[in-house]
Image: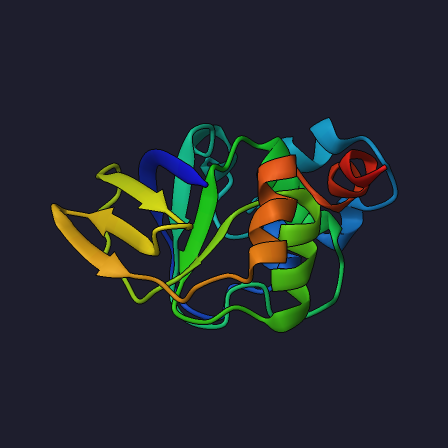
Length: 156
């Protein structure tokens, strides 16, 4: 699985409440979630996420187990999220909905190009290629299918 986008840089310990605030979870309208993603962190950030690769610090996705956080990012147009370490529940939720995660410690400059190949095991930012923590063959298959539901549909 390959991808490329522009970097949107965030810090460490971005919790799921910052990704999508609880006040927006009364609706199942994914468009509402996408419009309000990161609103409490930066109200203008949602408009910059289409075609973006989020590059964050450690522990991205900590906090509650809400799968809506990963869905909101994907609906907002995020291509992938890169961080040195992810909260495990967020990690599984993201893979299950088909949002690629890149485990690597990257330096970041907003807007710089980010390219990755999860099967080959690398990510490139600022002209530097770094290895990434490999995903299992099943996780790669789930991501290629677009998420867990689509993966199981293909298995029929």
